Image (cartoon, rainbow, N blue to C red; front, side):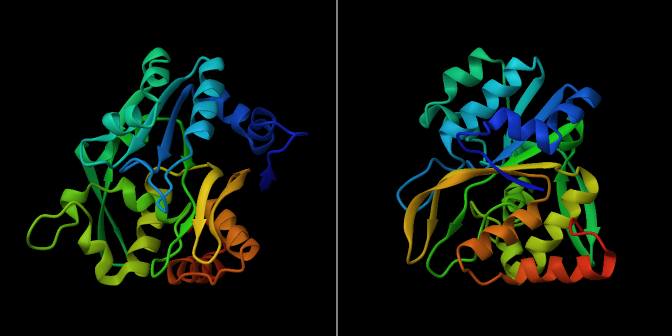
Amino acid sequence: MILTVNGNRNLGEALTRVGIEAALERSKSVLIKINMARPPESGHPRTDVRLLAEVIEYFTSKKVECALAEGANGFLHENLERVGLGKLVEENQVKVIDLDLEEYDRVVVEDEEHYLPKCLRDYGVRIAIPALSKRDGMTFSNNVKLFVGAVPRRMYQLGEETTWRPRVHVDLHRSVANIYRAIMRYAPFEFFINGGKAVIEGQGEFDLPVLVGDNGLELDRYLLKQFHLEEPGYIGRLVGLASVCGDERS
């Protein structure tokens, strides 16, 4: 399911239609995976601040426990303050979880070892709010690729330690697909909210309309088609697996 949020259907109504209300009846704890490893800059969008603030306020009104999660090498709280969300987070008692610092479990997918933060399972409702980008020379990044930022970077080093995850790039599309598969097995994300600042090579920066969905792969494929972009290898791998397994979330 993919819903567009516009003047006739606000964010809260769209979230209700996609199943948030039913999910909150099962659990009063929400984890939101964001893209905020660094603050945004020109040509490098992150999770849209206005959209994220609206989502936080929505869950605050529902009286649920809310947490923001991202692997930011220990700087997530600082990054949120730098984009102007520090006060909102503090006032609403939103927990800030830097996934790079968390304990993890080992999950094997296609003989690849991946390491997933145990805290993902502490929350009954899991939501992703990425930032869409397709920069020159880089692969498309949105819902599926967001979860590369969920695995602890200390476990993805090769040789001298870096601030990124070089082991993922040895076979990038295979690893991106397998991280997504591992996440969806270990601590499935049920809801995806897209919107705000985006960037596409040849099209520049623009504001993406707010979309709400219940399947990250489906939403990525929809946006690739909307912007006439070629599906990256990791999407093709997941689609191929879905045709065999009968489940797009594989």
